[in-house]
Length: 294
Image (cartoon, rainbow, N blue to C red; front, side, top):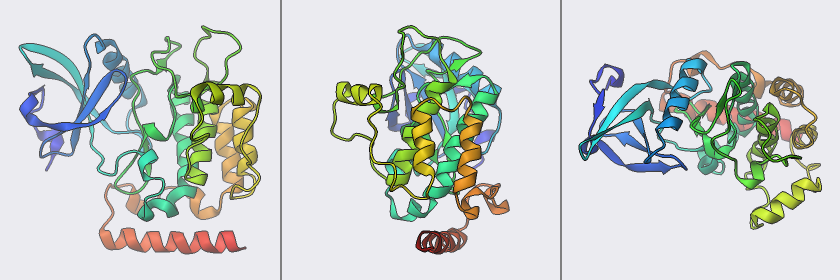
């Protein structure tokens, strides 16, 4: 179905499926019978929607950013609420997909993609402020799309949302303005979780996690593959990168060629056929096996 051609300027409750995701300021639901999702803010959170719309319009179309269609209006109980129409992605979040068998072979590619996405938004003077595996979605072709800019900063605007402790950079002073180093620090955690398939500091309290980061007490990074990845993560956590593009450059040096190659032509046009998806998956698994066995 061609969702873009649908007349969805005004969305009613009976047009949407049950919510598929809840955030601090909004919930997301699929529009029934379409490949669109609608993001509806909670009470008194319309400002976040306006910020997010502005950011999506600034970012434009990019293969690693969730596709934004347009703003619409949600009609409920005699009230109208501004909402965003976004691309619906069946696979869900990276966080939920890390250990899904059909996606495991994509991890090396994902390492580079999360860094490239962060570097791209920084080039547009946007700071996400909540980078993490929970805010990347897996697209139909297996690549990632960064999403959820409702708490983000644009052109130095104030932070509207703070990251989970395992993604949070220890700040020397409260009330600091948003900094690209916040996203780069969180990027280090995302890289760790992608490479291991495990939640960083799982089972530890928020207070314990904050104390570990303040004391620069990190998990063992020496055993991470490929060699050199652990040092990149350590540099993210130690604030030794000034810009995210430096992380991208260092990842390209340590990742195998198949993970660093530009998107293959068949990936530029949406969904892969089932046979092609399995074929590319098998080739990626074989290449990964050869690389790790070398």
